[in-house]
Length: 291
Image (cartoon, rainbow, N blue to C red; front, side, top):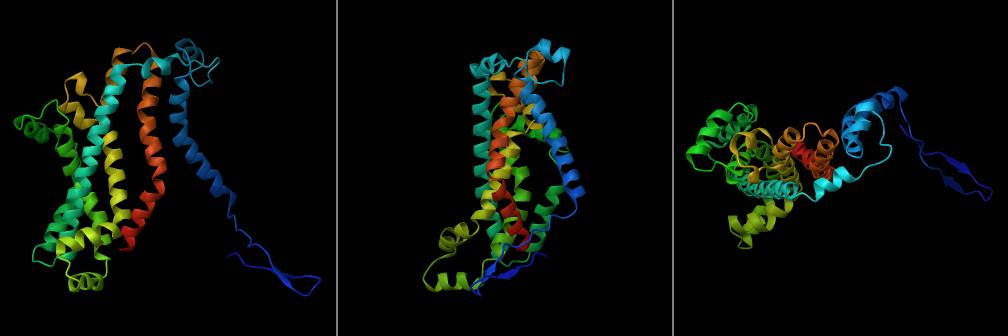
């Protein structure tokens, strides 16, 4: 552990030195940087590949751009198809996030603050939802969306994403709401606040870290969703970005550099969004564990 060392000065006073930092075993950092490199290398390869020509990629697939070429990225950015798919992904992500936050927060409030006979059973039912990924239910889900008339619509994407995101949302939010002291609710009740008033005035602000966490997770999951749009969307005008990347790669299979540029631009928004709110995610999950 770091300790504080004090040394006497000429005037008899003692100056407090900075604590010594224990760096630990150097092999820990070597292994950590190795795994970081393994994770970052494919991303850098895709991004840098978009700045190269097909001839450069053929001659040296792992080399650096020389010279750097901006034409691939420019051609993607001026494409109406790309921006339409960005808009579709953004709309689906925003609607999914709003649905997950609103429904998850209301359901978590009931499970955390109300005492009724089936409380534990309902919580266990939501927890069991974590064991059933969307890929397992894709066939009945496709039939249900088709019967509802939601094929080739963003609604057919948003509703299932909300449903499959609710289990993890409730698992995260319930500990936050249970951690709110009962005395606060009793004081609010004495002041004349109803349960709905207590929910909006106290519960929502106090659970904000958890709400932000589940919102970010829902948005990123929606942005990266591929399996569900693949089954639901058949019209190119309604494609989201992950599905658009696959269609673009099939259409320009011989233009590797342009495909890499399109792939880079499609994943950069999610990377930036996740990086900016990384601390929020960690803080929200930490609060859920403590709760």
